[in-house]
Image 1 (cartoon, rainbow, N blue to C red):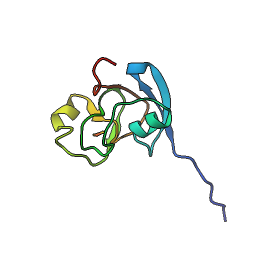
Image 2 (image 1 turned 135 degrees about the horizontal axis):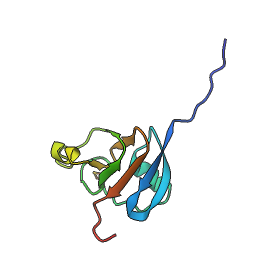
Image 3 (image 1 turned 30 degrees about the vertical axis):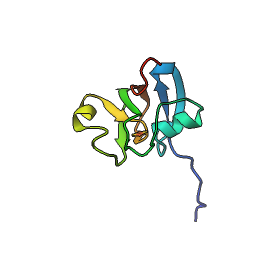
Image 4 (image 1 turned 90 degrees about the vertical axis):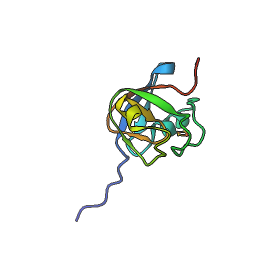
Length: 104
Ligand code: FES
């Protein structure tokens, strides 16, 4: 009989292009959660996929999107490479650019 082994979730590298900073983002963590945990002032408001403040361009990589309000991220936006940082969990290393705060 083998003992259960506690494993930490798989982690990926998340580069936020706006501030040229790379942090860890666990597979079970949203990009926004990882950014906040790292002390980054990522633009957001609701954190539940209902406002669009965290809209970001996915420059590199793939994500899984959690349920969200389709009015905040349309299929056309997804096709154009946009995502919601508060709803996106990594499926590999990522590079993103937040779009929600002009001039920063
Ligand atoms: S913070 Fe509101 S949709 Fe992400």
